[in-house]
Length: 322
Ligand code: 5GP
Ligand code: MN
Ligand code: MN
Image (cartoon, rainbow, N blue to C red; front, side):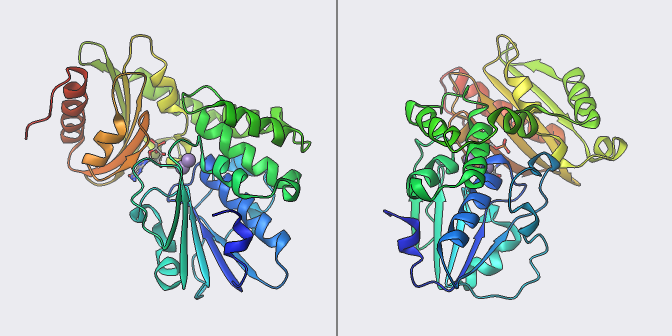
């Protein structure tokens, strides 16, 4: 795929989505592509669909134009999924994806199984925003598109500190800075700023965290009751896993939050040895080698037992036997 616009040349109705529980890369890629297509096509309809968005992305242009209710009945000529590693993470936008004449998947998850008609998957890319930069014509990237792309890159690289950051990532970030973006503000507001409640939840999760597997693995969890107590939602949980990961001596950090009765979302981060994407894929999820996740039904106890067994096996260089 040389150029996004070429793919969309004859498309009159274009739809865009990301993944459930949108994160910075998902939001940044959807908003940047949305603006890019809108600015460069004349009479095309472009719609973007995402679930709720955390407030700390409010500074991004196009935020108010996102459809959150999925009520519109539309058959798109082209429907694009961004940063979505598997079809079960598309959420309610599935109805547009299924009916679309042509589907395109642009993503960087190593676990992506190429579920669209056209698949552009670059596992080496730090973020979907990094891939999009390469697919856009640089002269057509304006300041607000640059802001959205930059937001995605800093989210997925943890502000250029994760091992997915490459020379190319830094060069792209440099080019985006040249578009006049206020990068300090973007980094502060979208990445570091926390509400009082978010900090309280972080504190609680750290207090309740525990070490297992010879202190090489740290685990913590949050229940729906905890969230209710703080009047918080799952979008207030960003960053907790990152704080766990930097615990000295840790190989793997695990953050578990209750989605529903006997249903949990598991986030994993690895520092060196363990391939957490492999574990997530085993349980029907996915992600990257050092950052992955999955959902699991059962008790919290079951979830912890299952996940630690796989981490232990990798730490000890053993296969899991069922
Ligand atoms: P997080 O732990 O931040 O939710 O996700 C870490 C990485 O794993 C992200 O790139 C995310 O897309 C991926 N991931 C998390 N949960 C799932 C899941 O349930 N299924 C798949 N396929 N990928 C997931
Ligand atoms: Mn994502
Ligand atoms: Mn991503």
